[in-house]
Amino acid sequence: MRWLVFTVGALLSGASNPAMIGTFDVAGTVHAGGKPKQDAVVWLEPATGQPAPPVAKKSVVLDQRTSTFYPHVLAVQVGTTVDLPNNDRVFHNVFSFHDGKKFDLGLYPVGAVRRVTFDHRGLSRVFCNIHPNMAAYVLAVESPYFSVSDSQGRFTIASVPPGSYTYHAWRAGAPNVTGSVVLEAGKPLEITWP
Amino acid sequence: MALSRLAVAAFIAGVLYAQIAHGQPVTVEVAQSGGYSTEEIAAVATQGRVFGELTPARVRFNVEAAWGKRSGKGSDAFGAAYPYEGPVEVIEAYGERTFLPGRALFGVKAGRYRTPFGISSGSDHAYMGFLRAPLIRYNGYFALSNSFLEHGVDVIAGTPHLSLEASAGVPADVGEIERRPGLGTVVRGQGAWGPVILGVSRIHTRPYQNPRFARGRTVFTGMDFRWMQNGVQARGEWITGRPFNNTSTTGGYVDLLVHRPVMGPVTAVLRAERLHYDAAPPFAMRADRYTAGTRIRLLNELATQVAIVHQSPQIPQRRATALDLGLTYSIRR
Image (cartoon, rainbow over all chains, first blue to last red; front, side, top):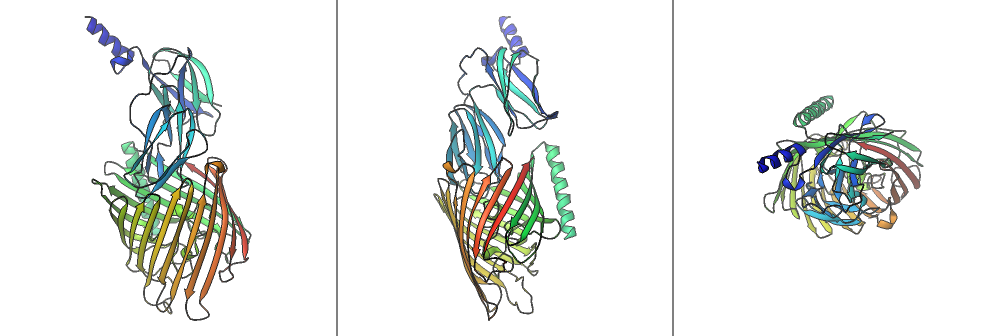
């Protein structure tokens, strides 16, 4: 019976595995000027200031194909290693000089992968030295609770424990949005730029 | 040409429908450019590019079209990426599939694409800080042209570091010059070792000059290199061959592009180039040109290019020393 209660409780909480019992997914939308905005990063920091859980081991990819980076905006937790494979027939030379994580991966061909660990927080603007039209953003945040909005401005932050948070939102060319929120299951988080 | 545009429009519509149907992303880029040269030439242009991947076939597609307008002639300013005259032109429209079995590389591209001789991509000759094509790649200088396009099939085989590419197609050029119809071939070998890429290319095609005096085939052999390390890139091409019978053209260029961390959004570019066209007097031409310039990313979507050009009098021009200025605003969805 305890097993049954445990399982039902976990399902109702929206957790996908036993380690995330009691958590839920935070859904929301991003708008600017009254329109939904894609490629905005939203992240949550616990108001209690407790340290962030360690980085989950998972594959994070910033792909290069058709001489473009995909995705255009990538959010990672500090300490995450990102794979940057070249899936184009032409060579690429990926670099980030200006701020955030600084690196220059040199020339590499199709089929090759270079890796970068984003070991401190901040925004990295990523380019290719051969193809100046290629540009991407990698935003490294301390928190494990983050998401990037889709073409309808929607985002979902997975496995968030209930409680008080400071939310932050970033999008290219706009000032960051910050605020406080008490999160509970089923309560959407709306991010709005004027 | 109208049929070609119609076919491309249908292709784009089909691609967009397929992508929407499969929920896969399609990327659209639009760039608006404007420029002025002290050779008393002003130019404005719009370029659009649609690209993505069709699923589940994993065929990449790329469609690029451009429209441009130049205030006058008598200068080769603003010739780096596409022609600045005439109606909307389809520059490229191709599908491509690449396979990586084990450590090998095999790829097929079909459609309308830039002639794959040497350093040939649009990105390599525009958007970097140069607003003019190299002399060996400009319309009317008895060599190659950046507006050479093929309707054909291109195959690449080898490994990522050592490959052989072959293209067979018919000319589909845009701009002021158009090669005569007829099958042409390009073969290119490329090897890469660390920060160095070396390439050798050979093209057999039809001349674009008047058939009353330009007989035979256009045949060129070229070598190209690229070296890049720590934000410094050197690259260049050298070609030799004949634009048509009883003539020869030899020339090349060397570029230095510097984008070090301390330079922030600024990329500095230098170019030295030479072109020798040997023909019966008075048609022979010996030209040199030197370029110093910069590309500055002002905002995420806005970049400016400034270049000072000093050129020998054999090149059609209005001034021996000219200042070119360009501004490009680009968006991506």
